[in-house]
Image (tube, rainbow, N blue to C red; front, side, top):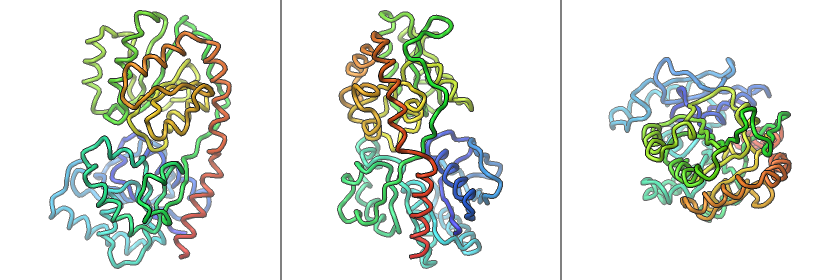
Length: 370
């Protein structure tokens, strides 16, 4: 089977979308399939995540993918994309997220190649972003999809009924960890670490986490907050840290290639997101035996955190006070952290990677054969 994956951009980007594109492509190549990657990236773009050499990467190199394109540029992109698709003749095209899907639908009109859209966020994201006013239009274009991949079965009810037959649920793969955190035992320096991992942007809601930690910092002098990730909100978050006098207690560590060490050496995980798709960082933290805190109103997070079993859920999706209360409960109780951490790895057994890759392979084969 020949499959073409499409993403807007992956150049040096360490997000969940980019990671899953690489992961699924590599798995299909390992199973004997031929895979292409098409992105809007400029020449010289590099993937943050490893990508097998057998994948053919087509970098369009037509304008900055992060800047809205003019009508002329879109026309030029359409000509080039159409040429690439005609040359490579994929049996199925998989577009990650709605923007590339709508573009590729237009660019390849009439070529009769089935196109799948892989949604990487919950529909609730439209409640938080300006693009929400286009939600109905986006869902109407999904009628053209040969399939719609969602990440949690709970999301199905959030889509219009007319799309139900096209929807298939394929969660992300999560690898088990042989190394486990010790959430009840302080580190070598006698301190405890609250960890969060994610892009520094609006979705991840780190200002609320910093505010919540700030309310507890003086009471829990042996706790620190580490945020691993990079993004456009760094300057604002650093200013917030200074405003609360939390320098040295709250640190933005940037990106890393050794995230497992962070999980195994931390004592509690928090993902304060407003919405998610499949929260990879949260799943990985649980796999390492870290109890977790997140918002009950955050799609994706609420699918992974079972309150009282592997963590705690704070009320709402943007509430500093409720998040601080949940964190305080587990800051105080090392025995609860230990018990929840011991149960956390069981949460991710259902996301066994070979099984997830088989779901991808089976679904794409059925689309190609139809």
